[in-house]
Length: 136
Image (tube, rainbow, N blue to C red):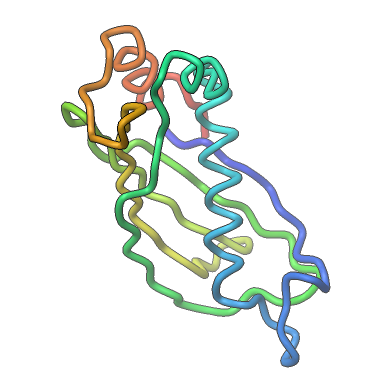
């Protein structure tokens, strides 16, 4: 299942050529992941109080076609893999039927000491629900 997050490209997102600056795609997909996690009922503030945080461990990205000023784009996010202390998200940025950007993001759960830690059962169930509950 896929979570869809719409975005309008603003002038501040572009470079002198009027295309989206490459690093801004990472901002776009971060926002979309945050919204997907929120939609699954995961409260990251409560997680932090409990001594756990999500952190990006790795990003693999392919820039396929440029987005431009004033484009309506969308980030499509899905859970790609769920492991003991981490999970992978597949994220694509589309403009209509054109795939612009593709990323695979590895997210790890860290303890207060900054060490990877297993997902607690309730958190694991909520992350797993990302695969089943998000509608296209």
